[in-house]
Image 1: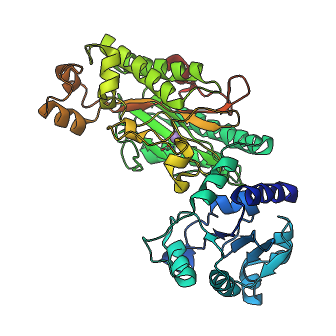
Image 2 (image 1 turned 90 degrees about the vertical axis):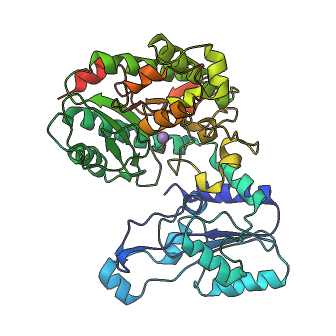
Image 3 (image 1 turned 45 degrees about the vertical axis):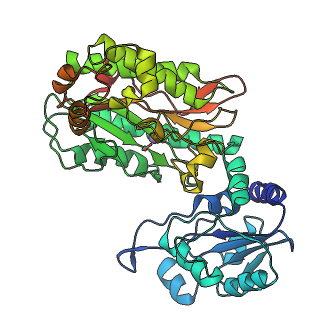
Length: 458
Ligand code: GLY
Ligand code: MN
């Protein structure tokens, strides 16, 4: 945890922003995978972590702005729990580390909320993302699952704090990114023909676990990089394959790193692979060069799409006017996802609070295929931390569908695309902080140019 003053200052700012009512924070519970005591790895809710720092299951918190109270609701461990889990500080001591003096038994929360309802106090809560959150809102506030009305002032206030990373948070993210870079180097030094993808993913995850770090999301280590979120590690890697790795570490305090790299199974990329890879890197480097405070991230996305579309035109995959092709949405044939996302206590930071609030500052999103997957579009500001992750993919089903519809026939060369249905996908991803006058890479640079990746190869 950070010093208690950090959490006290964050809560004080939040109270001022929301102004009145009662703020309810739903901490997370343990969750059984195949029976109650065999649990998934516990992960505290990130907003709870941000304002209270307590990484323990079975807690909720209330900031009662109207009555100037901050309360942790939870139960002290029983002797049975201590026998199985060992000596621990009391909940009161743990809460004091976050600057909270009032701790009440968990069962009292229901009465506290019902009394607040009777007094017609406004009860603010955030969007739910677990069934247990919904059940609690039903039991305590009578809110039916699916009929929740999260508080927009609460969401906006939380987003407007969490979105600007403090110096101590930046230091944590830097640690996550340093270990994330080690994970990618481990893959480059392990990948070769004749081993399974799982051998690479094991080396990658070992690089995080040896620091006692966790994973910020499930590892993607696949020879089928054209499938964007592919968590299958069962394939044998063959000569001529490329492996796409998207993996990140999470520090003990919960801060994320997130990087992607693409490496050949053999010691060198084939000329066919290198030609497309270089276009992807050109798009990546154009995006990085454009980063500065004040630029709308959607403009960085448009610029990257144009560089990729021009590169694909030079290789014969695309034709026609590049600007028109990008405006029409034809670039989504190659890159059907966005350019990046915020990163912090969540790898997709605050995604549960709503992309429109986090990435679009309340403005509407495009519904166009490809553009609609842009998670971040707003103007960049100092203190923002986010990813840059363009990619180029050959997705056989998308080629078949659009070809059958003659979609963008004026911009795409389907004869050439047909020849690349076995190609896979390429993505490189780095993490950046916007500074007062530009941008800074988080963590060390990982190999990105083909010759740099080849030099790391085992
Ligand atoms: N690292 C996975 C993603 O950004 O979606
Ligand atoms: Mn990412």
